Length: 485
Image 1: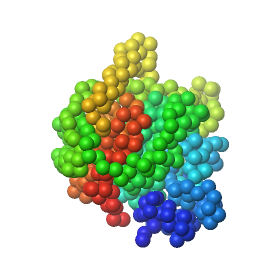
Image 2: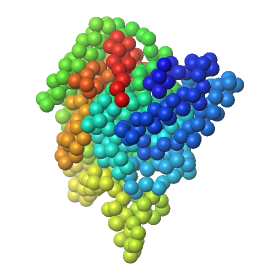
Image 3: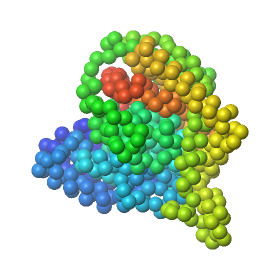
């Protein structure tokens, strides 16, 4: 058994029965990182010493049998936009290249308490703004299935690390598809929970009404285990939902006979890769064979989602990123003459091209004379998109769509055309605008590249998603595919 390629739900009983130790497992993952990381570049920061200390602590807990959870002793990676006490949190940006938080994000605290082992912080598009991880100021992460291609973004480092066996579990964040899109392109399972299901406290904000922390793992059962740990109401997050959290593992291993699956006609568009469409259609046929009732539905405002998202998200980014001015922490431009000069030079030198583009777009949309024409109108259309989903879920239990219109594209292919890059998220953005949960899981290949299918449900109905996803996964078997490195 190659420990680094094994799932958490397979490893947990071995750890608890003392057939393997967390120290042994963590060493195996660190050796895997040492072997393949120079080619994948999934991590911004590695923490091998911390990982070994946490593994030893986990072994003590396992030996004593006290406070043991299914995550005790399991190696885990954290996207580098979540605060980790005493560990660099850079957001893959020059402006935070030296920022070491004095506190943990709520999800990090929960994982510490559960006994998980932190192996490092993963790469991302700067401030989570991007769809390819090419916008990182730190390094270029590559897709483990093909090193000439991107891993997706912005959680590309987490997705690539899971796919390459450089961690067992990983956290990502999703503002417009940043978990699901890289999950699809790297052949792993990525869940974006309902907005408010997982605390955002300690997540460095991009667009506060859209951001959500979620999971990147090898299969659906691991998704359930990780969600059991991180999903909860948090008084530190004013947007956290005070709604009971079920045991997500109880939704697994159930039939989907009679489940109504909606397929929106707007999600099979011109320009979509025909091999991707073929794989997704075949997956829908598999769901029908498993007993689901397939019905065509309409989400009529889908065509406005990209424009709506890039007004709402950039406006919030413009506000959130105003705090990075060199005055309190992070990068400060040297040799400035006055405070105005310091602010402007710090931001000009500290932010990358894509972050500046989005700040300028958002500032323009919020400016006097344009607020009503752009931002206010976008908020109204966002409501219409949310209502589309509410009406659709009166007809069906879940909605199934492609996750991405194409498989992973080549490095550099879209960097000079921001609009084409933005269209990579055309199937994922509506979910964030509506605040609902969605998962991407493997459903086939386009040549040697993974293809993902997306399953959505109503707010706080992650259980429905996991039930359908697990049933499909067990029948299709694509979750067991691993890239050859």
